[in-house]
Amino acid sequence: MTILGIDIGGSGIKGALVDVEKGEILQDRIRIPTPIPGNPDQVIEMIRNIADHYKWDGEIGVGFPGVVRRGIVLTAANLSDEWVGLDLASLINEATGCKTVALNDADAAGLAELRFGEGKFYKDDYVLFLTIGTGIGSAFFAKGELWPNSEFGHLQIRGKDAEHRAGDGVRRIKSLSWKKWGKRLKEVIRVYDFLMNPDVIILGGGVSKNFSKFRKYLKGINAHIIAAGLGNQAGIIGAALAAAESTIVD
Image 1 (cartoon, rainbow, N blue to C red):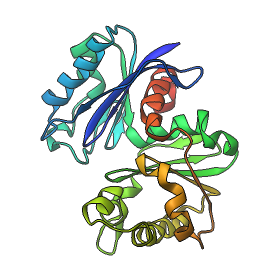
Image 2 (image 1 turned 120 degrees about the vertical axis):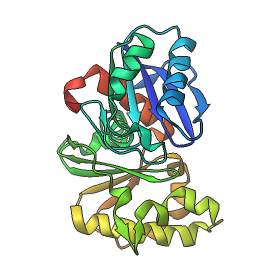
Image 3 (image 1 turned 180 degrees about the horizontal axis):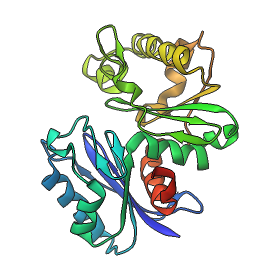
């Protein structure tokens, strides 16, 4: 089965056709810079452009950077506050004519990683999946079952959101070395480890490809820490998977 997966981010909106049975992107993905300030009209127009690019009229799965419950946006990190209270799934359906399922972006990426990435080896465990990009997204799985909208990136650490202390955006803006940033990330992960007691923590997002450069600074964490296998493709694949199996986000 093929479904269009779309991953909305604070800096870019990515989309691709996905074989949801194999967890594979079928064509080169398309990436469009997220318009500023990222209000609903702007973002919906970009999504319509992606659907038009693929001449798509089937189902669409969309990951959104915020809390999404039954298609309704409750928070909108790194996008316009105008999103709050809107039915994202219905807006996309109206713009494209395609049945749409919407969910939190980190939840989408986590679903893909648990099904097709390194997480497939830990389906009977308690797994915390973190997407580390501009911010920090999270998805928690209890023996394969998703606890949606965890949003641990906004947990307060030293008086600020965890992602404002240890997101990859902070590393780049402050030009932090892998050692200095790795110590910040360890401080954040230690809090997650203490609160959730996961068996495994999987690090995804763009920074996961550099895991070997900072993994040694994460020693002393009780949970087993590994790099994700799907990288930046996870959000797209997981969004498509959510649309294929929509009961997982109801």
